[in-house]
Length: 237
Ligand SMILES: [Fe+2]
Ligand SMILES: [Fe+2]
Image 1 (cartoon, helix red, strand yellow):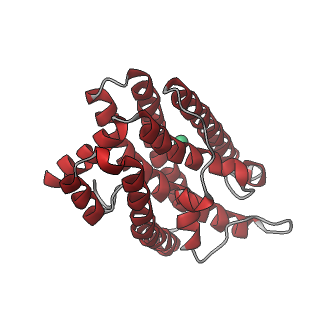
Image 2 (tube, helix red, strand yellow):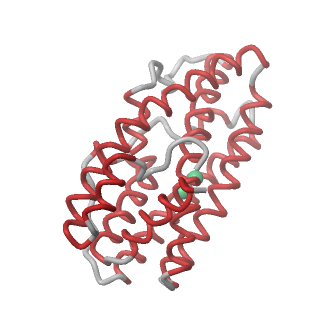
């Protein structure tokens, strides 16, 4: 409960200042744009021959993320703030990938089984990443509702609903593609990568946000934040 109150307080402090709020939205936006900056996300073309339904699901998922990026762009503009691209180190996808000891990029000549396992890795990566983004959005939705940031609220509520669906569909597709033994190994790898990335990433974001919030947030509260490091919330929320 205390943890919930502290995290909500953190998001309220962010929402209270348009420039800081815009920066938080820019972080979310960068994650949404990540798939467009790489070639190994949503490989619908490579799976279509064997799993046409999965191909459609991946294609729709990619479209959702493009839509989310556009929604965040508009939300930042509505706050009257400039839209910036953020440093790669501020994109959580990169942080997780840095801790993921495997590549799921599909190459010409990969056979059906290799493709199946690579897509399974991608699905597990996306699943854990999106679960974490959802935990962060839980608080952001609540903070926007309490502060009546209605236009941002409508954006984050819509994104949140889509991410909840993505968390389910990536999980279901992973189950359909893999045996239980395969899945155990794959899931453990991506769970670990997410956990390892989380602490370093959260510490970095906390430092950045504290610098941006500056003295407008009382010193005692900044101390709590500095001790907690939870911008993109850790386990459980
Ligand atoms: Fe998204
Ligand atoms: Fe998503």
